[in-house]
Image (cartoon, rainbow, N blue to C red; front, side, top):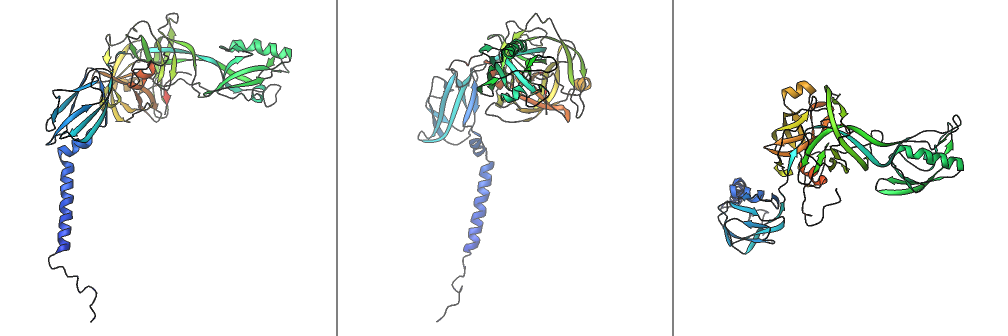
Length: 458
């Protein structure tokens, strides 16, 4: 007897329909669970957290269960009011005891590890916000090659023959340290007259290179030349960001100083910041960012030395608290994760030496676990500043950003096509480069601390 296919496939109890309803019910339960407070708080519970020493953090899980807390370094942290068990239906507070790191582990019912968190306790850093207009005079650690020129009206030039490139830093000539352009001429003349080459030590990026350079006589003047355009310094106007009265260190600009011709970062061989007076403003417009016009004065009264030139600004020693500031006492600083989108203020000078406060909006935060220069997008909302400058102008780089009573960042870039907006950097990265804020490496000794320095355009 043949049986037709499917003759046995009857579904008298509606099994298929039951499966569908069961699946739908499970989906609904999952959606409801995902919307529940315990589920959302469980997912939001961080795996890493940083706390400022002397401050605590209230944590929420809201679960109908108990748990024990284990700390890998109980000398660094404690959980308030709990020595043995936590009632997870109630919030609990993590308190700091000293600088350092500790793993915090929650064990459900004292047995099952279900949440782990690394907590780092950082020092309570407080600095004085700046806003003052400053003149920056940076000395390179050698002489920077910014171009080539022909000798005897023929290519290649002596410098090109020696494979000396734009952006190279001349450190030594014939074993003599070179720190200024004026030191090169006598060495070139002496070698040319003797018919000898010059042994040159170059810095190219992170590497050093040796080469031999042969001067050639100019057919017109009879002088010897090496066919290089060189520069040994840069100067410009910027804004002081902060001053640390305890360590007597400062930070300014919020971005690196580069050579105007090569775009290369200038390696510091010395330098100083001096008083600056804003004389006028070239107002910004779409496609044409404006600038502060300023002069240096009292150059014999050095405000501070320049020790470092990094992607986050210039840093050095400052022995006295700067004048003309709006703040006389230090204020707390915000960690990157504490900064919020919303209203804030910047401190800057638009006339003379008077620091003023202007309203801005932090419109977008770029979350960063590691240092990067563009951390937030800001927009000027203050009618007075918009009327005076059109928004952000060159020379405002380094202007402190204040939010909720804390120093949170500094202005760094202006958008060319929208001068009302630009980028800012988190103050945390500047403090680290200044040697003011220590992190997980707090047990190690601090690293040896210790253009135009115009606002960069985007």
